[in-house]
Image 1 (cartoon, rainbow, N blue to C red):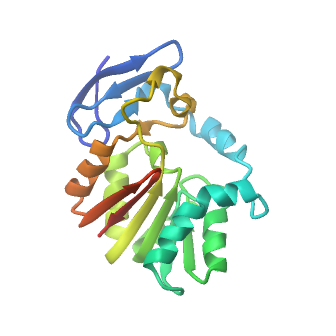
Image 2 (image 1 turned 90 degrees about the horizontal axis):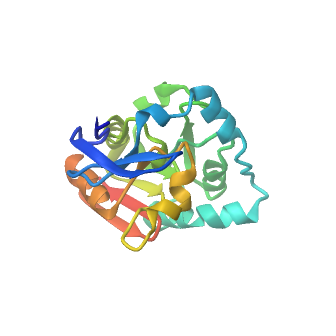
Length: 210
């Protein structure tokens, strides 16, 4: 069965299918998205996220989020207002940024659900391992763009699919909550579609500039 891409609405064909996974590839934005029939229920999704054991004492997790912290420090002075979007049940990234002197707000569709925070405007937004969970990426990226101040930055961390990766054995597609996987071409499409001024890809960190 074919579906329209949730990012650009283009009809997409099967890219990969096995007993557990069905992914489609969009010919327009080059996004790779999971068959909606395989989406987790909100209850199962929440249970999966609760197994993420992220805390301030975990040095391994600190190293994992450090590239995002470095991007914020590189571009913004202390006191700048940021949003940790999709922060999960334990907003460790925003807590570290608070320690560094930034003013932080949080939003998560399951654990911190007050959408009124999105009425504010932010100097920067951080999304650490979040955008691959977007069921409706077109709406999400439009909302994030609208919530950024002029000259603001959207700093994301995700694992892009690229040439040389064997999708069949790739760990990233095995997480059932990963529903939209990006390629470099997808990132450029997003930059152009939502009128970001620039985008830079530095390994797994993607920085959109408004």
